[in-house]
Length: 508
Image (cartoon, rainbow, N blue to C red; front, side, top):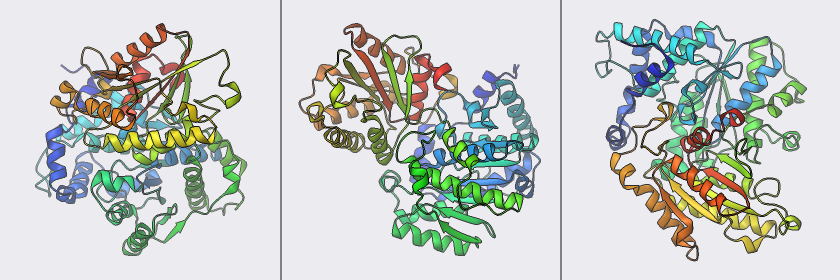
């Protein structure tokens, strides 16, 4: 009998995950299965007792893009919360950004809902779906929704029950066929940068990606985007006209924000902050009926400075291990990994300035890396190494051409006994890949190819995150150096390190 606990809710939710074979079948379909996504999602919405028009009460800011949409969502929510402290904000963060706990995807006034609330709302939706499985108008609709659809349905329910004044809704995948794309009339829609690296990862042209992302445009609703590649911009303009958006605006440059110390580190965050400012400005004008000052208000700046998002260009001093500093960035595309290295290889972050290079406090630098099976590890690592060397030359540190003393390639499996933390469980990786460490072996081979002189004994291929943490501790035990460890390539990897290393109290 179900205990109706948070853990029980997580186990029920994990039962809805698609396995690796199913995901491969979807990819092999060439996207044809996506055509049923919105009709099926609407059928599930009806089964839990809501109509699409009721979702308009959520006052949605809908955000998509291939990079930066999580940061933009975080900036936007913080701006609105600090501008209107009497309002209640709701935010659904993409499940792909979940690092340590599923409940952090659901935020009220910037704070994750509690485990007890998660369990309560989860089973309210679960029970409605189980009780109402009669065949509907769409014959392809499975009896229960998949993992990501369920999360979206639950978010709608939570935010309606709590009567939020503003909902920041982050697209999970794509746009047109995403499970979040059933709100008839959001207040404003936004598109972050359309990264060229996704063209290769997804096997689509930039125009096809833009068509998908532009699918969130709605009739009579303003749309805002950052500058895009020419072909992508043409498609977005066409989609805005096709879907009858009230207007499509491109955000201007803003030198004022470039000088502001944003709450999220990295120079690449400036563009995300500019988009967030314009989304918040449009939203507040519509909701209050008051024209916004073209000068950025102090409340907006406060929101940008106080924005927090764990696992993005984040420095964490280990509270329990003396001489350990962790650098956490869930970058998982070629472009975001380039941004990660631009952040880390910096005198203010992972590399001391030249004058301090020979100080008495030496550092041992370690890279812990993983990426999703099927992506090109060589291109990922190649871009990281190239950016690292350029940054070292910029800071007159060419002698440190290979910055890391050790590199560790491990799976996203949380514990040494082969188990995942329940919130981080994934069925999307084939068992054979995990057992044989295929991805990790390929990464190690790629690293050796890219840096032929690198000592093989300093390249570690390990089966779990717990193994990786123990290896870092072993390296520290052989030296008195301060250990600086960069963790990147996967948000699940970052979340697992936070969990196993016991960093939750300071990192989250």
